[in-house]
Amino acid sequence: MTPEITEAFAAVRAQYGAESIRRVEEMLEPGGGESRHPLQRGAKWILPGLSRTPWHDPHSYPEIAPVVRALESAHPAVKHELRSAWHGRREAFFDYEHYLTTQKDWQALHLYRGGRLVEESAALVPTAYRALKDTAVETGVICPLLECHFSTLLPGAVIAPHCDLWNFSINLHLAVDIPDGCSITVAGETRSWEEGTCLLFDYSFEHAARNEGDRPRTCLLVDLWHPETTIPERHALVALITEIRRLMESG
Image (cartoon, rainbow, N blue to C red):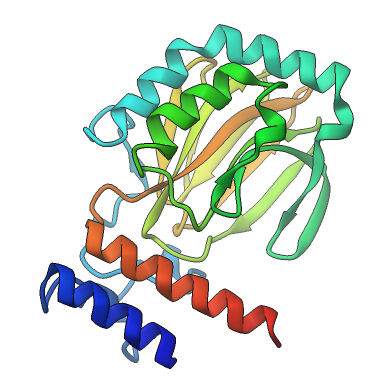
C-alpha cells in the first residue's frame, strides 16, 4: 500500500476501531481474503463476507428501499422527461465508455459522475435528478466511486458478458422505457425488465444485456453501496480506490 492509503486506513481505524476495516485489509491480502464464486472470476476485488447472491430483492434493504420507492413512484414523469431529452436534446447523450471501450449503440445521460451530481442534467430530467439527489446522494447511499446514468441500448445492441471490478457496490436498474425483446442475464439467469419497477443485482457476477426490440431500451442505472458494507469500510474503500485511480492517471 502507498503511504497515502496507509494513513487513510489508520485514520479510519482510529475513528471506528482496530477491527473496523478488517475485511478491506483481507481483500488486499494475496488471494483476496477468501475464495470467490466461479462467475466472479473477472472481478478485481471481492470484499470478504458479502452475500454471494447475484440477484437481490430491491425492496428488502432499509437503506435502499427509499431510493426504489422514489424512483418507481416517479416513473411516469421520469419516462416523459427522458423521452423529451432523447428527442429534443440528443447532444446531451454520449457513447458509453465501458472499461475504456466506447460502444456507440449504448448511449448515456449522466446524473451523477466523478463523485458529484451532474448539474447540467437537472433541467433535462428534473424528476429523476431530484429523486436521486434526495434519496441516494444526500443520504450517502450512492457509491461516490461510480455513477448514475440513463442507459439507452439501441435496437440490436448487445453488452457482452463481463464482470465489473468489485462486489462492494451494487447496481440498481429502474426500467424506464422497455420494448419487447430486451433481457439481462446475471450469473446465468436471464430476466426481463418490467417498466416502472427496479431490478437489483451484484455486478461482480458475470452479466450481459441485449436489445432485440425495434426501439431503444432505457433504464436508469444507479451504483449504490452494497448494503452489507459498513460505514468505516466505505470510507476505507473510497480512500483506496481514489488513490489507485490517482496513481493510474499519473502514469
